[in-house]
Image (cartoon, rainbow, N blue to C red):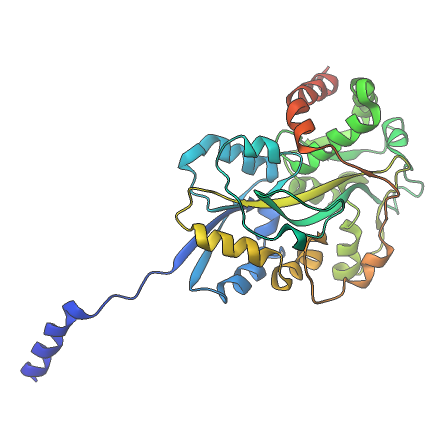
Length: 331
């Protein structure tokens, strides 16, 4: 027995320890990683393709993710950033943190096509005012009707400084009203119940009945129909058109897991990722899928006109337009 113990002890220095799994740290927004969001299923699917772990770092909203990157700079712990949108990609690009994703952009299926070599889309959707049809039988049919409508019928908005939907609504207002946007904000102000820091907070208040309207997406009613079997929540179709959001991901060039990060971005446009978008993120898929969209998607509002500023245009004007909004709603 002593000889056996001695022999095993002698071999220990030559037994290599098991290699630690690679860990991919991904910054994203809270609703993506929620139990009911796509994050858990996407994590499980990707981890089957590699000896690795995904470490989600959930922040409030897409703009909050950008603000975190600004604070951390080159010291960021992120390998991949998922949840920015095209309204803030130029501002994110200027940080000098992102590298080329290396994925064939022809695989990305979004309105207008895709050419960006640093950021890659994972979903898209048009913004919309969602309303409770039991409380508002005659919803606004245009942004102008919303602005000039009954102040007793409140809407919940998101903050453009911390939320990508909040920024989307600000850009929608600017695209319709231009130089008169400040006056439009002042007219709308009495209808605003509150301005939440992010989409999750805003939508939770809406479903609790705090207000009959909330700013969200044309796809939002599909969730209530498919999951809750509730049909009272609807998207108002606006005659001026609807503003588009394209959500993107990018890899941090200095990441120690650079190859794994590229593998994740390539995986992002496969069916194993994209199949989870319609029924977990409740957005439109931006890549290959192997299952049909839920039936509820067939009856969604289909905007006759798409509104969208270029990333460069938003980056140039964002600060001034936010200051204009702040002044108009706080006077």
